[in-house]
Image (tube, rainbow, N blue to C red; front, side):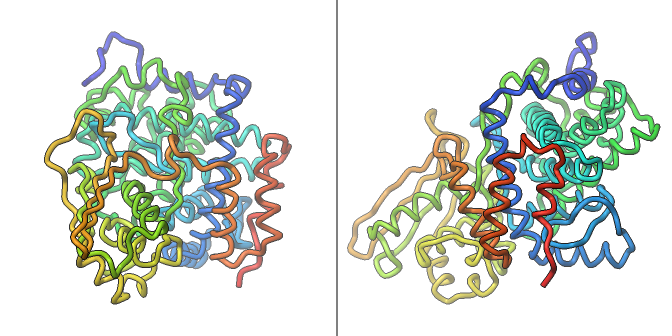
Length: 468
């Protein structure tokens, strides 16, 4: 719904939160969880830096003469201006669709977002250039992610349902907030940065399963950075861009739920409630409940390719409208394919970065299993379902049927990954990209003490290397 024009202005409320929240106001458990998610961002960035989309984009920027600069590009010795480093690192962190997911708290809505990766990418670039502390970086990241997540909770469902990708279209505001925080903009400056960001909001879900999906994350990181930096140099913008009749919410969604954001920033923090999903598998998080359940079945020896006659998987219709590639033709489409993700769990009994390749998609054994899998929406949503509840029935050749219900996947706050788990994920991502064990151990130790760093270059120097 639209906000009452007599109520405090939403954009002004956000600007006050961004400009005036102190690092000391952040709860200790929030800081602890934040380190987990920063380590996850770094893990995903190491692997994503060698993705095809990252290689193409880096080559383009180099040829365009964007360097040199003062902000590092993950996995390289290249340094760009912050806007371009933010773009590259936001793209790389989301390059394998392996970064964390901020869910919708309502079980009646889908439309989560990948907020942390691009907010962190932009904040890291500016913090490195300006030699800011680890606490400065962490505070900006938390502020930015909080703004993005609460805006996503508030936006009318039409925004996501009509095709917008919130990882870009909503996240740009959180990124602008994080960079504005690092630039020490006052409330007026933050307000204007949000106004500039609104006119850069973009990203469509039809591009899921293509290289533009990770591009969205990088593009938002760049746009949010540009918004705040231009305002720091004097650019002006509308001061009520979110709630105005011709502003963002009305134009892009037809309205918003004021009660989902007014008075809710940091009350509680989104990292704490509803929490974030950290991914154990490099694909769309909506497949993860099914994958967790099927991996448990296959690893236990209860099922195998030779014992399965058919597999029937059901989710709500909103998920089915997102996982649009039931018969994927390549690895990018496979990341948004429930049948493929189920097939690798049943045939290969693992779901690592190596599984998401064109060769595996074409593997006759995988194609055979995909042919035995049907994926449809269930007809009725029961009262005790979550917004990702997945129903699985495995029909065996001996006539038996094994039925499983999965309400959450591994990495969900109800089944979380620890710092140690994420460190192992980083080692897997680093190994995939050719990093040494010694350097990965140094990175893990650096993130663990990030809040003690006086200069974030202690971390960024570990994230650069000589290129192969």
